[in-house]
Image (cartoon, one colour):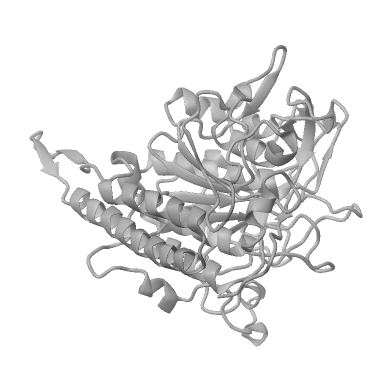
Length: 481
């Protein structure tokens, strides 16, 4: 187990700036993109209009029945756009001392996580005279894992645990709780713990979406995990004109780990540098593009409950841009990956027509795979197929979105499908997979209890009574389910 003393986090929020009220669009480029409006109003909500999200919400497609886990900073649940949202705040795991901050109105501690959550489940309600950040999937359930940032309020309680291990613990927990999608807009250092957690997620077909670094990785270094790891969907940003985001030198960002790009520039951001939650500004960063992408995936999961996560990810690579379905085309320059995420094309295509396999599971290093040149291969970064297989129980098959959209986290009964035969006879078919999904949830829970029990032994060995008591309470709660 790798242990880095002190919490080291890289927030992928490159800049927040005030932008002129109108920007003329129409820049042409090679990779297809969603249709853009003729002008940009400057209200920071262009992503919502670009994707015609309100039309989908009016049809009842709002992420209902889907569980999204967000790993980020603490959240302020009092901002208007998050009031009434189905959010379960969860404390960081592996911290000692006083209970870490999970929710807070402290703008320094909670600004990032609050806005990331808002792009997922925000209602759009604002302070008087305002429109708040509008969420793509306001009907989804959000598990908000709080991981304090080094030097910010609450971080002192977690100074003994590396951010990578805390993220790994959160991923394991999200899998055990039945999450369908895990999204993180923070970067951590590499660790075997994180690789194992991603293997657990992949084995149970939980989609992991991660933000790329904002700067140009070809010229500068930094914390590049989990976005650089195998199986992860790594997201970059585009501007309202569809061009890639730019770095601090004004150069368009390239990153060979880019899988897709999504709106991430000139977007509404709640909370000002003056410490006032009622202030608003325009922000930029892959921190925004990533939850937008995760939330769009949640809409697809809701609309097509029979589709597996692998089929949905394959559909994503084939339905970028505004030109409808196409063969996957990867941009080897590192600017676009498989293209610009487009909710309209993505939601129009039935994913069940595609292969049931994670297209981001590589058999060589991601860099070599993206370059299409095995000579660059220095081994798989992140979970291998063998590591993933180790997390598959001998009694289950990986869960699909259908489980999350038709049963509760604690594994209540599955679905009943109504089948209309050609002769006009209506037949009721009880789907046995409901029992299989129950067993999947049960096995996830049991594995998680075993993991917590081992952590309890370690805490007791080190004399950490606070941590031990917290673990004991969590284990007892899980065993009662």
